[in-house]
Length: 177
Image (cartoon, rainbow, N blue to C red; front, side, top):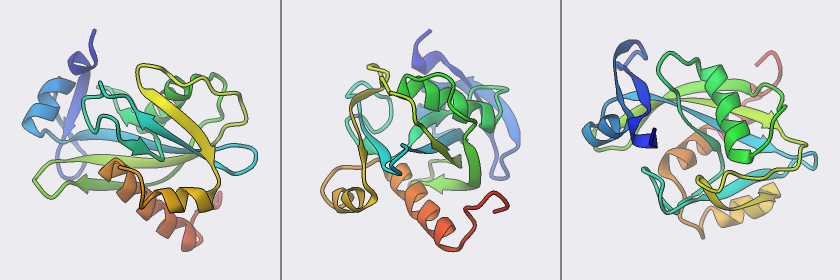
């Protein structure tokens, strides 16, 4: 099955399931669906950053500060976050990513998706999925901040990262946050 054939839940503006459709149709017709964004840090607190392959359906060859992707039909956000993080980073045995918040990403042209943002600590050696990622590195926060102005980033990832920084600055990143 190709990525375009993967079945997704189609949701409304309140994130309630209203139907299902193949990913390719959801993208082509701008049908609202669900995605997960997982920020991974290593033991030195560096952030996993990668460049998407040129064959990706959305934002090919763009850099991203998150691993993640679409939530499959009937799948929970939490399960999708763990699955996507392990698949894209090429690891198994990650701790369950910690949920931070959810928001409706909209691109300004009427297209959008519900986005659930997570964080995870990855102290395992990574071997990123070649079909998804063609470059990766763990960057210190300062270098990541410099690169934000230099590299072409996924717009939804930039928005999620901006919101995550605000969320953490407000002190809501703890276990009780």
